[in-house]
Image 1 (cartoon, rainbow, N blue to C red):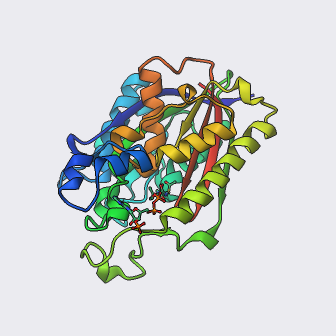
Image 2: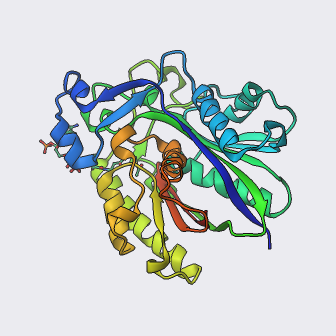
Length: 322
Ligand code: ACO
């Protein structure tokens, strides 16, 4: 049996930091409100000349270094992002070019905050079927470009960042199971209502911004994530107690706590980074994974559940041994 296994991870956060106290000067909010409702304390903001491919490239370089591979070995690039540099070329090809490698397939997967889990699931299938021997999988976003900085309901939640992993075949587990889902009936609860084929003229004008029905998103996210996390364990005959780490999408501390509770997991077994960068959409899981591995908490052979939920709605879980 061939598994795909994470050989190295990397992350990058832009240097500019905006704290909750900075936000107090922009909108009618408070550090106390933001912290108690979301867990977020600060977020990083990409520089004006930094695009998603730039920050994704930085995370990719770290992952390549930490995996100890030659960049020429990479034969697949998959990027989860909702905030691409251009409509085309896709972010994967832009990062491929920055890395100075040529010829391997490179593409982006658009699934909002579930983007990395979707991208990882695609790369896992390439590796398991022999279609790739060394995949670079990235989650990278500049979410703050979609934000209406006058809307306190949403502007306090998001930040920019990138995370990356190198995936290779292994006879040892490895990714055990990926499960993806979506339900477009919820499309109006969380959206940026413009793109190349709709309301194009409004993009980037300040006329529109990210729209969210916060309470509804919260309710469906908690229920769905709890269900899919439990289902992932049941489908793989794994008892809740066997889980070493939950590496969740970092959107909101209260959503994460609710999922941990459904899994009977103490919060000490959850990798939490939301306080440091807010919701970075598809970048949040690979960044949290990198934090847990780099600080020595996540050890080889341990059992990890990653879970994500985002606009669409989309969702997904990845169960793996590191
Ligand atoms: N500062 C101060 N007050 C605020 C702010 C703010 N930044 N934002 C909203 N409020 C006010 C509201 O106007 C409202 O005031 P009112 O009662 O006078 O009308 C009050 O706070 C309560 O608002 P609620 O929306 O009920 O607050 P709630 O406790 O639901 O928290 C939040 C809002 C944090 C957005 C929550 O609903 C949430 O986390 N939802 C999930 C959203 C999310 O995670 N989205 C990310 C994308 S999806 C994903 O990644 C999972």
